[in-house]
Each structure stands twice: as structure tokens, then as C-alpha cells.
Image (tube, rainbow, N blue to C red; front, side, top):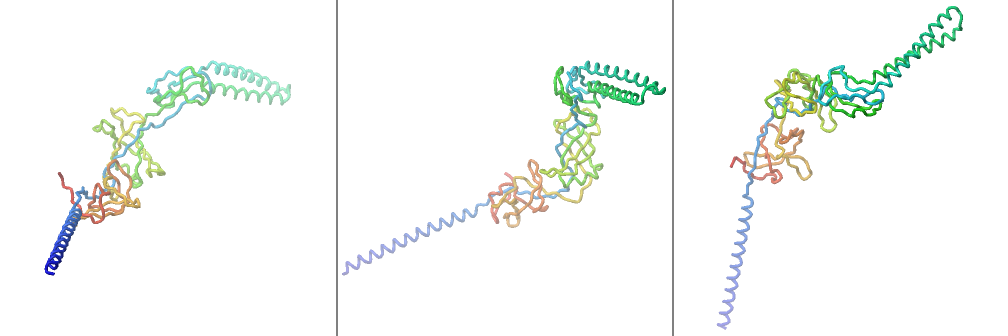
Length: 364
């Protein structure tokens, strides 16, 4: 009995030791797990933060414009024939009234001479019959027929002379030859475009401005408007307001504004060139504009646009729904949701969650 009791006590002692060891291992693993969780919770992301500033609209704005001629016209003949003369060169300015193109006029000259002969005969005939009718030698109906024939011959002669004049195209203004649309010595049809010309006596620039600024065209004379050409930023040309469209573009919701040069100076300017237009204003219209970096824009699960607001007191971030407007290459206009003076995360919003602790990036 004594020996059996000793064995039983030994087994119980061994079981107790094993239980204590298992409990210690469990506590150790649990402690390690808690330490890992605490480590994960202690990870604080570093973010770039920007303070939002509200700027006065139109303190200075820059737009991209395109140079246009005062008018662009495709010149054509009103009669058909063989093109005999088209010696103008592209890029050359033909003075007003100068010859641009001419048809072979031989057939038209013959037609004009034929109508001239018919007209002269009708003129003699009506004069003779007027004298005869005065002495009651012929019936009045014969005089009426002669009068009618005379008038018709006169109309035919005028028509032949007009067609002869249509064989020449002259410059309606000091015309820049933009493009020849056909070759010399070819057969052309009536109203077939032969050459394209532009009136460059005045050059225009068209820009598109948002609806928030179109109201300021009423005070355009108070704006300082300058054209800046690529590659020559030091040379600026003054512009003045000409007109604007009163119907917004269906897609961009912008309005076209047409400007013109006050003086070209020594810069070569041609239609089709791209130019930057800078508009500076000595006044503001009482409204402010808020912009933020495009990289700071984030979307929620429903696809709604939002920004992350940084709270400097708690060093945490929280999302806020915003409405955005027109954008440039780097920044976007915020129409609602932000006010001046707030701090936002300028990048990496997709990595954040509400209430997350972050560290403000101050530099390397």
C-alpha cells in the first residue's frame, strides 16, 4: 500500500507540473499576441498636410487661347471654266483688289460680244419702230414687241458682262493666302473652292472662361490682359476685349471670350498659334476660391468625392464629403465642403480610416 500511494502521489505531482507548464506557455503566447496587436496599433503613418487658403477670384488668372484671323474665306468662281492663272504663293499677303486667280475668259468675251451685237440691233430696231409708230405707219403691237426685245437684249448683255467679270477673283481685303485648294490649269466648277484666304488686319484670341468669371466682362476695361507666347515669356502683348458668347459650352460649361491685339509689335503672330492669356484685376468680385491638390482627392465606397481633414490637436484624420469643380494639371477647385484655414491630407487618402492617428510630415 505504501508503495502504491507513493506512485499515485508522484503521478499527481507530474500532472500538476505539466498543467502549470501548459498554462505558462499559453500565457506567454497570449502576451506575445497582445504585444503584436499593440505594436500594430502603435504604427502611425506619416502624411503630408496642407493648410487650405481661400484666394480672391481673378486676382490673376491664366488661360490657354488660340490665335484666329478676323475672317477666313474660301474663294471660288461663280462660273465654271479652265483655271488659267493661280500664281499666288501660300503665306503671301495680296493687297485689297489684287488678282488672286483667273479663268480662261475667251469664251466669256465671245459671249459678251455676241450679246453686244444683239443689243445694238435691238436698239436700232426699236428706234426705227418708234419713228414709224409716231406716224401711224405700223401697229402699236409691233412697237411693243420691239421694246420688249430691246429690254431682253439689254438684260442678256448685262448678264454676259457679269459672267465675264466672274472669271477673276480679287482680294476683298488685304488677304493672307492660307492654302491653295486646287492646281492651275484644271477645270473648275461654279462655287468650287480654289484658294483660302484670311483677313489678318486684326488678329483675335479666343479663350474659354468659367461661368463664375463671365460676369466680369462688363468691367473688361479695368482688366490688364496680356498675351504670352511660348518661348518668349519676356515679351508680352497687350489685348483688349472684343466680344463674348452668351451661351455656355454644353460639356465644359465655359463661355468663349474673344480678345484682340492692341499692337503686334515685333513678334510674328499667325492664325492657329497657341498663346497663354494672363488676366490681372485691380479689384475682386467679393467671392473666394478654394483649391486643393488633385492628389488629395479620395472617394468612398459609394464613389463620392471626399477629403481627409487633419486635426492638429488629436493628430487624427477624418473624412469629409466635398464637391469639386474645374481642375488644372495639379490642383482642383473645391466648390463646397472646405473652408479657408483647414488642414487636409494632400496625398495617400486611400490608406487612411476615420479616427486614424497620423504624424505630420515636416521634412527629411
